[in-house]
Image (tube, rainbow, N blue to C red; front, top):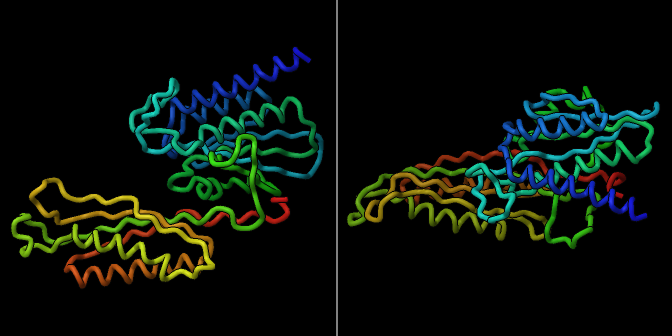
Length: 307
């Protein structure tokens, strides 16, 4: 018993070390070369048939047992975010401006741990496909892998994935049937006016003032244009404009994200953003350019798979 416990502790320590290593060496979407190399090396050691190059850095580890027809997919993402880490951890990012701030290092390490367990201590009859996906944050690596023939080459009856959720108690897993994670849209609005000296604002078309009004109006959309029975979020997360204390800038950028579950609600939010921008243009004599990107649909769990 003591020997078995020691073996488990040693194995856990290995995967903790892998997670720390991944955290220290984060890579942005479609550039996860070192991460992909590490995963391929481990899977090959454990007897998986590894196929690389899907959507660039994506890879699949396949393990077959017996002659069963069932085909199961397990998926994890690998990419990090363009964020400067300031945690002070001993395994903090060694790459300036890049950090595993969303936990994909943990996702990858967990799937590698599952890969080891399934290869060494689990008996099943069928085909297991472990899918390591690049670019979850941007530009949508799942779609890119599918377009690259993922499911034609590695058919799956079901695919399971998870996302870390720090607010849940340790050791807890939560799921449900149906919609569980919202569609992710992002917007970038560029307001262009006429800049000038802050002492003579009447000679300008103040894009910064227009941006301030815009942010307030955008935050009315969910409260006044989306039914209370629907779930949706609109968050403004960026305002960039100006370089000097005495100059009114000619151009300001406002950016943010929209999350929703219902395509009709999604359409209504985008429509209202465009209508608000038309009003901003007329009121402040500026030009507004909207880049609205629906880069991920909602996650809708299969009812039977969620049981």
